[in-house]
Image 1 (spheres, rainbow over the protein chains, first blue to last red):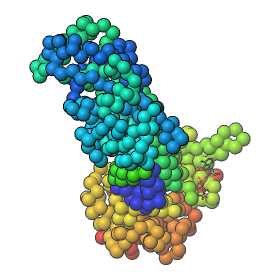
Image 2: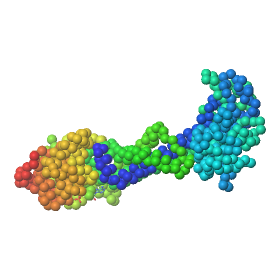
Image 3: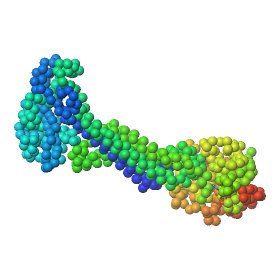
Image 4: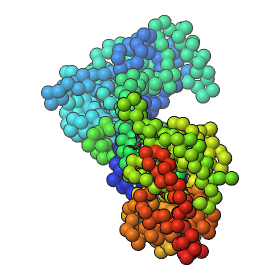
Length: 370
Length: 240
Ligand SMILES: Nc1ncnc2c1ncn2[C@@H]1O[C@H](COP(=O)(O)OP(=O)(O)OP(=O)(O)O)[C@@H](O)[C@H]1O
Ligand SMILES: [Mg+2]
């Protein structure tokens, strides 16, 4: 019976293209939104992940590092090193800093790089070398550079300091701001930290029990909190989970509704136009179930073709968007392609609800009327 | 036994002031191999009657039996099955599916009855060849003449080997030559394949092929006559 569905689809090419287009649009929308979310999620964790840390020590009660400042005394280093299983301890200086560029307020999360050890260095360098970073210089992220039209050699004013751009890095995009890097000395000057640091980063011995070390630190040193690497990366990502995930959900649902509505409308109008033929089939003795299968198959075929078209378009559309918008970073995962397929099948089936009801109401006795 | 038995059948449409009694206490039997022509003026209830016999419309009173089965006792599913296997329909306006070729249109009842598409298409080809449409297998309905369309619809009505063919004004949309072709076909369907045919029509010429003629008026049978069948049908036997 399903060949009737295919024949009908081919006969009504305009309708077929419309529903394919609608589904493809919805699929591109859903995949891009999801890809954006994943991309952001990935990108926000990228820099913190690149730091060779096993444990992060921060001031208790601070939460994530973007909403409040953590201050710890700079003499904790020795105390931490005494703890069994701790291999290395690095102070980590970094804070969000407001600046004015071309008359507009913007911000950078400035991190100190230890020129001796490279600790705190950018994830990846795009232009210049972090090893060459001097006091009075700054490395900015490519996203920031693109957004602000800045290049190596340009100068930006941060607080009282004029900093020359000494390099361009990547992997430090946090959407609402980007990471930037200065020398340890420069950071001390800039942040006016005095005898404080923001975090301590601990590397533990290869076989050490992280959980035990964590507890020892909390017990021995009052007023600190200890996060594992994963927890620290997660707090970085939490910002986007809290603010963007609900928005993405809403947009994905809208995409889903658009897709269902477009197939629904085209399948419905095709069903109405062919209602006499469906009546003839009923009269001949074709069962309701077989008729529903015809309509559902039409919907599924348009849905699946639309999905494939959407899938093919999604990547180039993402690339194109990236070309125009620096922050448009998408990450496509197999699992998303699978669930979007499931969602497409869902759209196609939901779309048949009204057409199927219409089908059920066709009176086969009508076929004797002219 | 009769192929179809109609007992005190009535159909009342609507209610109150707009109530119409389209069929009024009709009783008649269709014998095996009979060609029954039901003739009557417009609005006399012919279509209503044949629709009830065809298990497509519920009776208000009385009953229809097909091969002894009372239609009123069957479920929707069973009625569909009965229409598919036991009945063949021929309509005035052909009612072919526009996006299907002649061959595919003919194959539909076979596929609906569970045959594979391949087998159905083969049987459909044979059926169409018998009706002289071997060269029209892959034409869409819009590329067929009226007479050809009606022959395709006859092929479709016959493929599942039904015992009762129901035709409502099968010649009304055809020119006289094509109409005559269709008449001959209906005649041979009954004669050589021993099926029963019930035809509802205004077309007086159909009396030539009828074995029984029922005169219908205001929803009632007013006269039953023997048709002129013997005079004509012998001459044109089935193609096969
Ligand atoms: N669905 C319906 N609802 C209400 N009245 C109906 C309906 N179908 C038919 N009728 C009425 O029933 C009567 C019989 O109609 P029917 O179509 O059976 O006549 P007919 O003999 O086939 O006429 P024709 O030769 O014009 O086809 C008419 O008065 C018609 O208006
Ligand atoms: Mg009629």
